[in-house]
Image 1 (cartoon, one colour):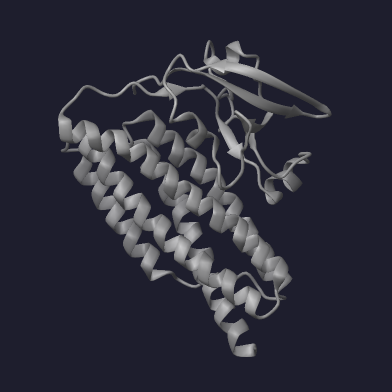
Image 2 (cartoon, rainbow, N blue to C red):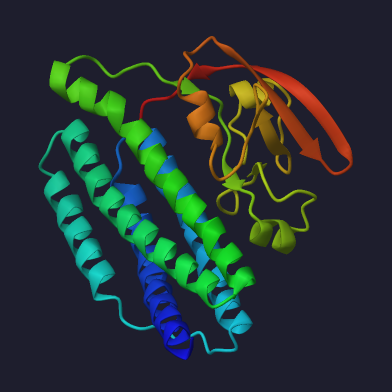
Length: 274
């Protein structure tokens, strides 16, 4: 067992450094993205990654170890490749540049999915159930992020192949943070699932003016917990619930705010082009 724990610690040290590198890289990826949905995905994942760093530190505490990162050469290589993609994208058409950016981002996600899956299995093996639970939350977020990137890529790839005009995409018009146990504890939220409507930065509204969400009465601080009866969590992201629809479709959202619960019907709008 001591050898298994040592291996787990090494994996966590690697992941801690990998996530810290990613925190620095994601703003550049968001800035390079032309597609608004892709940019929002990178911005959302930055918030998730910052939470994941804190979650890793908590895992070290539970194991009675110091949260000391170990240089992750794999992530260094992936980020270096991503930097090249961004630089080369300046000379490409927007569609091609965004597709290349998604490819680079999914390589990162696949590395993290592998790393967290291994660490979770090791934690369970030594009976560190709380640690395994923390890692399971992050693993779910990484899998969800990878799925979202695939969903964003599909219409872009179709456009690139067919040479058609940009596809019309549905849009709700909010910034949000996926609610995990960590986020719920830090923000004193009543639930540990759903998405929390929250501003990404100071001075930036959480709900776009005149957006479908604004017209439906959704406001900052609301927690969207269901979309058309489907619970919103790490496995079922809000974006994934919206994307299959068309502008003009109506979806029903279940919303919590403090002690109140309400349902609103949102008529989806058209995603603005960057």
